Amino acid sequence: MFEDRYSLAFKLYPYERSVDQDADSPVRHPVVIMGGGPIGVATALDLGLQGIPVVVLDDHEGIGMGSRAICFAKRCLEVADRYGCGEPMLDKGVVWNVGKVFHKEGQVYEFNLLPEEGHKYPAFINLQQPYFEKFIVDRVREAQAKGAPIELRGKNRVDSITEFDDYVELEITTPDGGYKIQADWLIGADGASSPLRGMMGLDFEGRVFQDSFLIADIKMKGELEFPTERWFWFEPSHGSGASTLLHKQPDDTWRIDFQIGWDVDRKEEMKEENIRRRLDAFLGDVEYEMVWSSIYTFQCKRMDQFRHGRVMFAGDAAHQVSPFGARGANSGMQDVDNLGWKLGMVIRGDAPETLLDTYSEERVHGADENILNSTRATDFITPKSKASHIFRNAVLSLAGDHEFARPLVNSGRLSVPCTYDGLSLNGPDELVGGPNRTRVGSSCPDAPLGDGYLLSSLGNGFQILTIDTDAPDEVTEDRVTAKRVAVSAKDDPSGALSERYLGKASSAVYLIRPDQHVAARWDHFDEDAIRAAIRTACGKGA
Image (cartoon, rainbow, N blue to C red):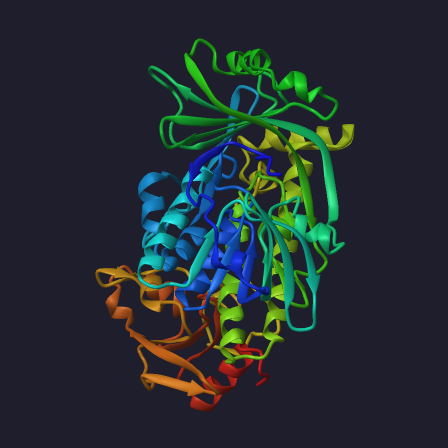
């Protein structure tokens, strides 16, 4: 029997009977993904664009209601842009760079997340998660029309799996009954409660923070005083709650988060009259229509490893963080970015299976960074003792007039790309005087390039980026080809390219991975060094 767990915002992949259900024996697929959310579908899109057949199984027929994740960071949008769906997100989203922090009535300070020019995408957009997911599915449909081997199967619920040495067998229930399929590789992108994780007897490690937060999405009417910025109040004197967060979304919708405490009756708090009581106290004499509401708690947890034999986990199925800081969906898209090219290389025989161990290595590193920042933010937002509460408020009182105190204010350090410092796929960093922001392991920052942007020129494969120096058009090492992208500091009169990639050097050579992270860099081309770095970046040793 099927019982829908939630209402749909968009019905995008209605149930259809597949040929697998009529097969005499379980059909084998290269990749099966459990979970049709943004991480699962984005992973399918990544693999499908590489020409790798992939099947997505979801127990619903589309995208759930509710804004849920709304803040999508620059790095996440750059990944989506490589997949061909970044621009619709930008067009629909509400762009913001400025945030303001308040304590009671007074403003403590404000910040600009992207004060510099020369980027295709802004620091953040606000976009309701259903739209974000829909744009990815729309791009999947475009890719399917051009032959990308991607299947989205709605109302296909995985009830159990059996692991073998070289494949996984799945038992699936549909409205027409059950069937089985097999997968060379299985990816769990089935959310924080992850049935797959439960089937395998795996769990999270980490903390649950004893506090509750009420989300209300509303449409406000008439003249509004709130600009398109992120506003965060500690101990607001207007309204109720220990903290309050206000964001604007598309469709004239606003997100308000109230911190309401741990020992609350959730059923009572979710009654419309009680939500309106909080909203009325916060907004004053403002007309509004309620769109959606929910209550959540903070959790900062992760699996010990993200690869378990033939099974990989990504997104909330692998790790959870508090929503302040917008690190959930944004870090999940970085999982996709990391896993897609590695699994593609392994399936094509261009890299050893051990390359997939570095997916876990690098994204566990990223999860730990996110958990550290989210934990610090949560401890600041929800002090656990009288002493920590006094310290927090002292910092807030100083921050308004004293700049030294402002870095201590933590209303959620916002998502930034993870840098894979010191990890196993990194090659040499021999660009003397090179900028720290483009050191080996870092993601490539964008820069103006003629009429376009640098990241749009780098594509989805291995690249040799040369700046004011010579190199061959391509280098092939053990089945892997790195193609040259030749640019000059003169191509960017603003100086951003030079500042971000040359620093004090007069020329540079970068080996860029398919996920646009820096694999190695030098001040001149050295073929032997490039070949060794390609091998290292593909998990083949130097």
